[in-house]
Length: 467
Image (cartoon, helix red, strand yellow):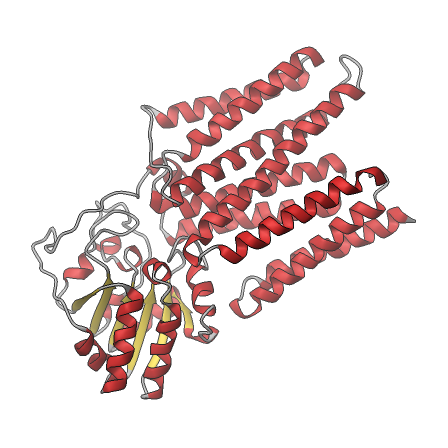
């Protein structure tokens, strides 16, 4: 009877994952979708603990001890993390998923070698264990390196012939894995740990040379790896909910990776071997073409905003760094009370990960219908009086359309240059995340408003109120 109830719980959990994932596609249902998926995971865990025949009651202390410690650490981490650090947290948590898949493979390999006679190791189970070990190890270590790069603790490092080394190492790992599946138990144990060590090394070499601007794509790809590794565990335990969850994470991560590559007009291969980003940090008041910047003060900016008919705000990572989303929303409400139409232009890869700006602005209660995606907002720039770029850089860089030599050439951008007036809020003239110059700053219609985003927006609010 327990088995039938458990399978029903797994079915409900699997459906909850699917419904939750679907609800995550829209900002106004994303929070509920997260709760629905969490409900499915909760009942699946509890059902397994209390109804699965293979769990001994003597293990409950260890199981619930781990659950309690993990829940406390996860809750505290989520509460303390700043919005600017969200991609790092996602990368770190994803790495923990990869570590789980890796350890499951190690434990099940030990069980397998103890339970079967020499020469009788089942090839199918060995294949799944090897795949879980390799993919989980790469995801775990790669995610840790990605976390280090995003947090500034790890820099870009490239070996000579890096890509050839990576390809050669991956082929070697897969070759040993194939041999190990058909080798005797004595050799199998030795090669298993060799494969484990080489997979960890590959995880480091895989992520280390990838540039900063491509890290969001890499995190998404590693997320899909974790899902696939978890699905391997579902096969091992014949656990339907684990299998479905892993497949959903793997497929969703892969689709998100492809969507982000499309948004950047880069193939996945180009991302993995192109190594652009994380570059220049120099400052310049003169563009490579000889143009000059034009500064504007808060008072003049306030006049432009108050007497405009239509304003579009372009949020970027600088908005998140300054924690300026609340005062930005205050400015939006103030302008609307003066009869000005205000919208937000959201680029797919603004910030450090997809949805970063949506979550940031939703946190300050910005109406969801004001958050307009790139393909829908671009035609509106020609009828816009003022565009206020708050901490964004590469997603508004015209080089993506005009400079074939630029590493971001071909990447779809927000067409802010079509507006009548462009105000760019930045701390300085330093290059953006991709490390390249932005010609938009030197165009005649563009004015630079320097300063911390939160402080500058606060000044703008005060100036608009004083008019």
